Image 1 (cartoon, rainbow, N blue to C red):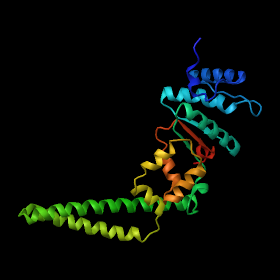
Image 2: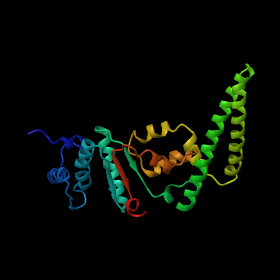
Image 3: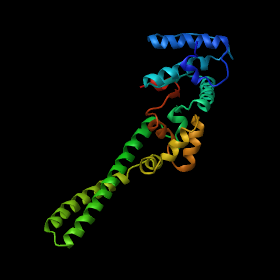
Image 4: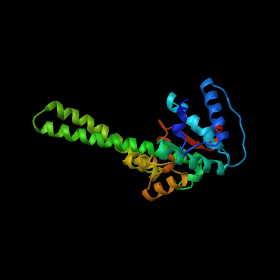
Length: 240
């Protein structure tokens, strides 16, 4: 008999006998839409027993595996096993800790939300201003060539530009998050290339973002689209 397809995600030569049985049962349960409850002594490979067939099922059905736990040691074990897997079968993984653990400016959730909203408004206004500036320069060039319609259109653009400038003054006077502003206005492709080269811990993401003036937590949220695996504290799912 050929090996089950899920073994492509098993990073070692051979599973323990109990691991093979657990993976078979979990794979069957996933295919039937059933729940699974199982236990085992420390060191018997429980995390891989759950992770390997789950990743195979998710890959085949365009789903994401979500691991939730409130035990830091369990989170570390899943990260370690996911790193081993990605050496042989690359996966895209995101590992979360709470916002309070990853915030570079040490604000609470409510204040962070206020800063995010203000920062996004600032970026949108800056973008509007840049577009209007570009448009009025184009119309100015056309009007100098004798285009009367362009001159009239430029007047309308200049009025709109004045309104945007006024809005910007108001937004700039409010508190914003410089790191989130950097997320929205700088090229962050390098971050995501780095993130998905391996399975990164929240501490590694924090350090990377801290050195570059970015907000790692918000970048992780952006990077969740299309990932194979998310590891997080279960409060991320249970707490609104």
